[in-house]
Image (cartoon, rainbow over all chains, first blue to last red; front, top):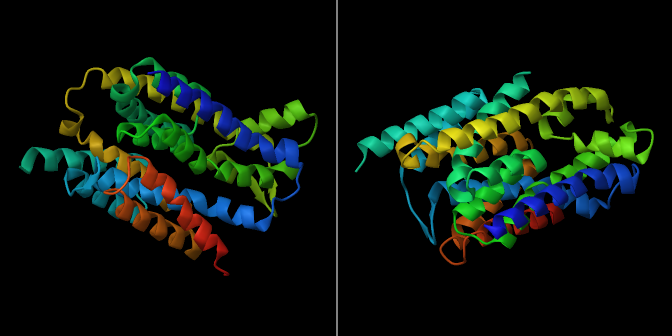
Length: 103
Length: 205
């Protein structure tokens, strides 16, 4: 439980620092191109990794279960520009249905 | 307002998912002091998968590194004392930052504040609602809640990937995670995806 409170404190301080660094310390100066290039791509790389781990990960192995069907629905709904609430509720409904029907 | 409602729905799922991992109080405190969907879901996903505290913090802060770029872009539009600039900068969240852009690299700071306040209210109230609902549910898989993590991250990915470099970074990150999940402890495959961003950034456009 201590780990969770440490996580919360670190994220609160770290996120504030990331938001404030540009406006307070850099005062409008840009960061080196190399740094900005990586910063701009980090979210894409990490989000994709999170999608994989949360869809197929089961401890240290990969598995195919009802989450994959929910993820498939989410992807289809998002490519049809469905609102976020529809995406999330629909994905849960599809996964719940799969959980009830599949062995 | 529409932002606030969407955020409310997402925050409910955060509260429901966080409750079994973090207990009833910590998710609410986290939403009050962190107020970042990507970071909170990211840290929760790592903890939920059995990863350690350090991996959870690192993954969440790497996800939030985009705030550094957003802050740099915002800086020339903020004026006045350091305290007032800091107050405006703290209200930065993705949707409001994007909505406050007035073109030519300028931002309307008051517009950003106005868009962020309903989102903050929706985020905190939604988390409280989710924690309360989460306490009454049995097996989360019966409700398909295990699909909420992937669905949410896929939604964020759709928002984020809007050019070929980001698409390449995403493909690289996904490949790294697939490859490493069977090999290393939970949390590390997500951190290792950083390598994809570093490599793609070095490839000349």
